[in-house]
Length: 380
Image (cartoon, rainbow, N blue to C red; front, top):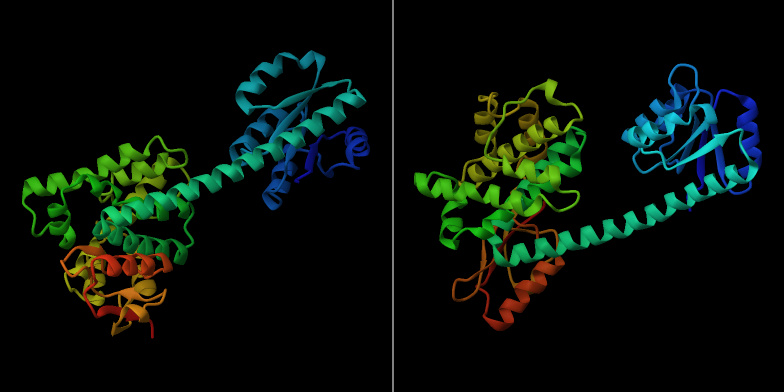
């Protein structure tokens, strides 16, 4: 249980009183100004509760707690204020989302109960968030498993795009990596709304599609965005996916932490990874693709391209081998599609083999037969 409490007051006597009352049940940290409190939190983000006096020199308590609500939204915020400042209470609730107030002159029982309740509220919320996170990730896993079964071609592309985006994000130490990586992983999920013939035809990009087919194919982005926009934690991701065919120009000024920039960078990453994947499937070699992208900086952000070059040179590669079903092991990458004897696609090329995938191939082999041998890449 997290019992870390930060008390902010420039009056040393107040700090001392509160510390003595709750030191036996809480870990106490102190600060004498709003600026000092923010510095303390920047180095120690694991704080359950912040209790701040309203009257501070410089930054007042409401302003401080408002900033904390934006930077550390899960931290519980408590405001100390005198009776003559009671009109502040209403605006403080609205602006800073204050959980509780402690009135001055302070009463011993009020201090103990308010801070104890606040610590308890933090830990209840923490447990609830943990359960929600577990439920969310389990649901995502199920959705992706169903996606892989219903449309293995698009699922395979989304996994390759995910590896490209994840590699660039990690290599460049981008902020908001979870948003970018998840956007790539879910970028093709709207393809389940398209006819199988169109999905198969679109594997190699737009070169083999007419104008009407291109329009229909691009509609999968809108379909996916509408599907995901009401899912908690996926609101910004749905907008990135919606705009994945926009190819926005970006430069170093776009790397700020606001929703507009996150959307712009995420959209650019999807555009870049989709282009690279299509060109590889059209049998273009890695160097020629990278060179073409570097020669078009308005469409492809040069540092991203260089990162892709460094991180993924030969990524869809390794030693090409023919293997039987019993030789499959996690970590191999499929060099060719896995199909049943009747030609039904079971798993698409380009996917890294997992234990669940092996079980799926074995199940199909038992019921329908799998064309052998399987062609895989083995890392060297």
